[in-house]
Amino acid sequence: YTDLADSLAPRLAAIENRDSFETTRLYDRNGRLLYEFFDAGKRTRVPIDQISTNLISATVAIEDSTFFENRGVDYLGIARTLWTSLQAGEETGGASTITQQVIKNIVLSDEERLYENRYQRKITEIILAQELSERYEKPEILELYLNEIYYGNLAYGIEAAANVYFDVSANNLDLPQSALLAGLAQLPSVYDPINYLDGG
Image 1 (cartoon, helix red, strand yellow):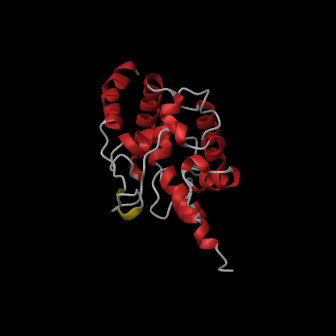
Image 2 (cartoon, helix red, strand yellow):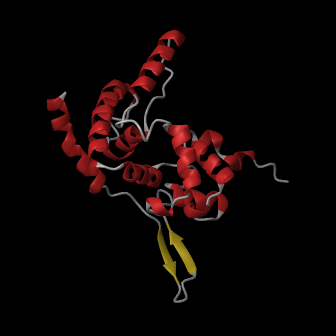
Image 3 (cartoon, one colour):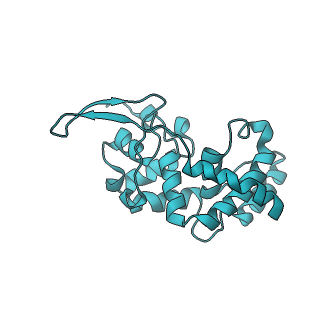
């Protein structure tokens, strides 16, 4: 394990050196927004202290209830998922922690994320998630996660999502808004609230 961890650990540099897009904005001299330029989607990075505690609590509750206690991996959750999969006779998925999702979204390559590479990917995720937990504090990991994940409707990261869905900043999300966005991150195309507007 130590040799494998040592060989994989340099890949964590991808977190510091990542080149992910952000929205470009033009303002007039009075600070009024004139235009936004975006390609793959909208994203504005925000520090963790500018994200609603409602949203943080809702995200941890939905995505990784052991986040503040685990070392990047929830082994009990993995065992539970394995048992459920064996009973169902098929893979039921789940058990990825927030830290593992940071590794998957930022560190791993597109090829590693392919379905057919899922077992090797999971091993790599587990090792790197533990290494990341040794190097980063929990608020730093949450900040990475909340600024990277996709919320649907071209909104990447919580600031863009808060703006797209509610026209507020991430700091001002109330509890119902936070609950919706925390759940939305799991399956944005399926849970997209815009698909369920009745037009009335």
